[in-house]
Amino acid sequence: MGLQLPSSITRLRDRLPGREKARPKMRGLAAATALEVDGAVLRVADAARSGNSGKAGSVRALPLEFPADADRADAAILGAAVAKALARAKIRPGPVVMGVARANVVLRTVVVPDTGAEGTIASLVRFQVVRDLPFRTEDAVIDFQVLRRLPARPPADGVTASTAAPAPDAVDRVEVLVAVARQESVTFHSQLAEAAGFQFAALGWASQANAVCLRATTDSAAGATRAVVLLRQEEVGIEVVEDGALVFSRGVPIPAATAADPDAWIRTVTIEVVRTLHAFAGSSGRPSPSAAFVFGGTGQEGPVAEALRARLGFPVECPDLAARLGLDRTERDAVNAGFSVLGLALGVTDPAGLGFDFLNPKRPTPPTDMRRVRILVGAAAGIIALVLVFGIRSTLVKRRTAVLAQLQEELGSGEKKRPTYRQMIQQAATLRAWSGEEREWLDHYAHLGAILPPSEEVYVTSVAFGPNNAIRLGAQARSGEILAKLDRLLRTAGYDVKPLAITPGADRNGYGFRTTVELTVPAKLKLDLAKLVPPARPADDASLDAPKRGGAR
Image (cartoon, rainbow, N blue to C red; front, side, top):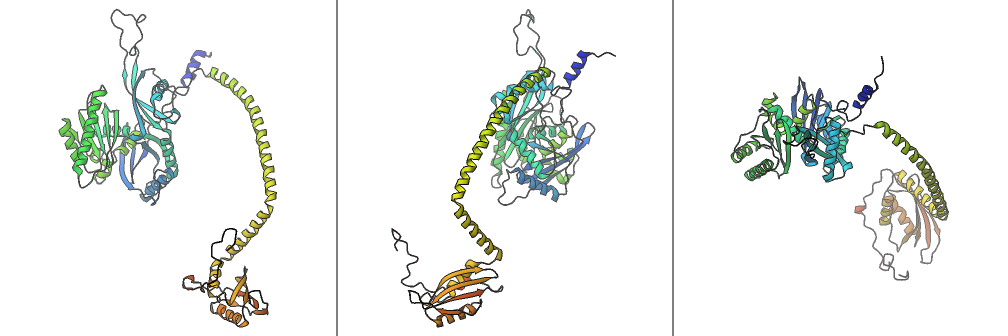
């Protein structure tokens, strides 16, 4: 059996990343849990594969609890709150899908040649879209969905294909809906999943999820165009779905409805919806919606549907999602408010998977001539390696030389500061000794200053705090009677006092007796500084006066 080289090359080329046969797509999961954070509420929807489509299991709304000063934009804090809410509800999710909000997605509709290869279409889409993005290309995560195929037009009569000028519609084309999210949105959801401790399987798009949920809960003829109005407390989502595919999406921020004037909120919503649908009909080149559906959990869905029915002139309904999906009627409010999270769960369990998945977007095709690329990359890598080796060597030598000079400078500076360091070490040792004894020595210092006789009779020459709760005072007194009084005062205050050794020793101020008082602080001694009244300050005391210029008082 001989080796057929051309067919082998063809098979290998078809396996290259980006080829339609080899691209790793996010296929539908057998079962999944969809999560959506709506303010302080976590919406949870379960779905499982049933035949050729997904089937919803349950929808729940769980309150999220945050600390008073918590930053809800922090993925770690939000993930911890989500994990606690799921634990309280005894929910252990399997693969989890979340959705990016409409406000965080840039939407474009482009037409590109139909190459038949998904990776090539992704390259063409990226080339057209990145030119007018409001942020850097490196920060963009681009995914798309083919809306329809546009066949090439035949050349006009009398004009041959060889002489005709190339026209934009001379080849088969595809109309593509492109959604672009920031990389920081993907990173935020990944960090949230890591903090919450669940398996993050896919990151869809809330607007696309609305189209999936509409397709699963309503019946319509092929090619029908319908509008979806999703009411939230502070936002109204407006989507247009044609033949089951999302073709237009808009999110309108609207202040929450108030109990005092709900009619004003309904009028505002109605005006925005009518204005959006009229703008879509006038600029998209597509048929106008022939029906609309209103969903949400605000309680104003019925009045909004009635107002839209009067303004638009076509049927506007509020379907009972719980009944149409076969869910428990007691979950009706949670199901209606969880329209988007239901769509995420149904979409990810569909055999085809999500139409938009920012965690696994469709990738452009890499160059097909990989052999030449490898040769060029190898040659460039060799040159770069040589340059890097010499460059790194030079950089390391300079860096080490600079480090040596810096260390020598620090060594010289440290030698000059050695006495200061030694003093700081001794002071630190003293502070650690104080802290280790767990005594408030400064309180005892203040306490002694309040109970000792006034300075006209006795003054303290030294204070030392030692181990075993010992205090050593050096005092100078006018007379021995005052020192005896000092002994009584200290004992009355609760200190254990060793007998005083009084020695004559006059100083220049007329204090003729000195002593050293050794105190021990009992463990049961409690200080109440608020009740102490210190001796009055002498009239001639100048210790607290501001110093005069030159240091004189």
